Image (cartoon, rainbow, N blue to C red; front, side, top):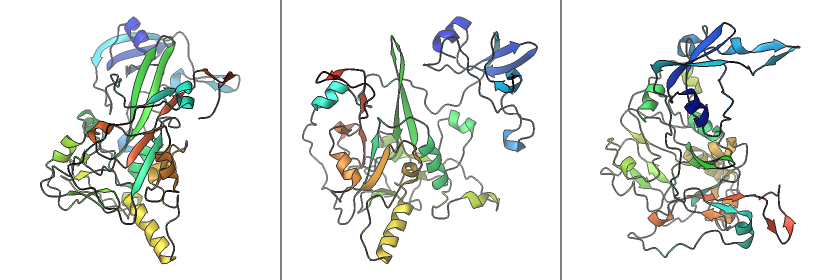
Length: 381
């Protein structure tokens, strides 16, 4: 429900309501969604099944009785449905509960006129390093995410989970903020008089050169590689979680439980190239280091250098909008190097001087402004 519709109905998020029409009724909790139409309530189909196995049987409520078959087709909208609040409340499992960036420049956005003029963001102040810069003799892996292209579909999150053997922890652990995804999609709403604008920002380990996690690990479990990756040595980790506390991006995950893998059939879904982590260790994105090593081995066996675009991370491979670019920053002709030098490229929380391997391309707002007397509606940026 939209915030206005929930307020009008006198219900709060997590409150269970009863939807009824023509003798059919279901009870489901309310999720308040900015941007939802005030005169429309959306209900997900596919739940409330009775023969879906021990994991899915009896989960949720079956809304299919509200679907009508008219003139040879199914109608997935129903009118004159009554909404009756109940006294029951449930705690929803959500990975992000804050809706606003609070005015912080996390997602850079520019008007079309600003983009064309080139005045996008100020040059950062000259920063001084406390440590000697790292040497990268062969490769320096980097990633650029185009926020103009990202649609927040979460395909990258799911592909990362499958590629890296990340466990499904369940809603009880998500409620405790113990989700294990190495990658997430941050979502921010901006309410304006003409509606709600939603902005998405894929967030993963930024592979910082001046990594704040590396400086606080007492057992040297998080170290920097000669190729610009922040490596996690599982055998050294003793689970202090100092690194997670010191990470400004909050992308490090602590494994609270030993998730069993005794099912020989289920184990066939695991990626044999990625270690299955045990309880008590910290884990995070590695820019799919197993794919990087595979690409290096193929190139070495063929006696040639690595080609640009030859190595693709799981998130990059699955992105339907081609919003993610990965490659070698040591190669000035690589796609990722060229994007790093475009005027839309910016560094998240640059004032921290972390020198990330992950940067972003800011959004350009195509709001119908004219440039040189020509309207630019529909232009591709």
